[in-house]
Image (tube, rainbow, N blue to C red; front, side, top):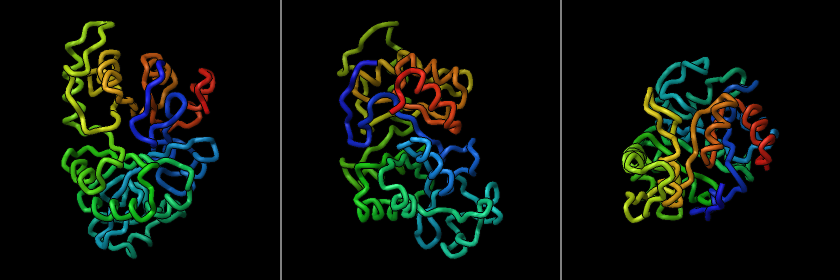
Length: 264
C-alpha cells in the first residue's frame, strides 16, 4: 500500500488501522463496557470504536442503542432518563461507562465516536475541549446534520468521517472510473471529512471496491471498513488497499494483520 500523508494526527498509524468495534463485541466481555475496552487495549488495540448518547441532563454515555433493554437489565430511552437513573442499569455486573470515564481510563487510546442523537453534540463538544482530546478522536455519524453541527462546534481541528451524503457523492463519482484509472482529484467531489468509514456492501451493492478506494486515495482520504468479522473478507479488503478495519472479532483481525506484518 503506498504511503499517504495523514490529514489529521488521529490518522497517523503505520499501516492499516485495527479498530475494536464497541470494544470488541464478539469478545468475552459485553460490548461498550469498561472491561471490553480494557481487554482490547491489553490485546494491543489502540483504536477503540464506540457510540455516544446523552442522558436527559447531558451526561454522555458510551452506549449504542437508543433504549436500554437489549444489553442492560433496565428499560427506557437514554435521552429521556437522568444520569442517576441510567447509573442504576447494569450490563452484566457493570454500569454503562461515561465517555469521560473512557477518555480518562485509556489516555493512550484513540476513540472513534459515533454520535447517535442531536442532544449529544453540545456536551460532546464541551467534553472534548475540556479534556483536550481533539487529536485523539474521530467523530462519525449516520446523520449529515449531526456531523455538520459537531464540525461547526469544534472547527477544523476535529477529525470526522464522511457523512452519508458525502460518501454517496464520492461513491457515485468513483463509478465513472475505468479499472486502473487514476482520477484527477479536481474532477472528484470535495469532502469536509478526513476519512471515509463504510460497510463493504449494502445489500447487493458493493460499496468498498478498487474504484472507491482509488477515488478516496486520490483525495488523500483513508477508508476504514466496518464491521468485518471474518478473516477472508479482512484479507480481501486489505489486498484492495483498505486503510482500516473495524471488527468485533479482535483475535481474528490481530491474527490477519500479524501474518501480513502489519500489526504494530
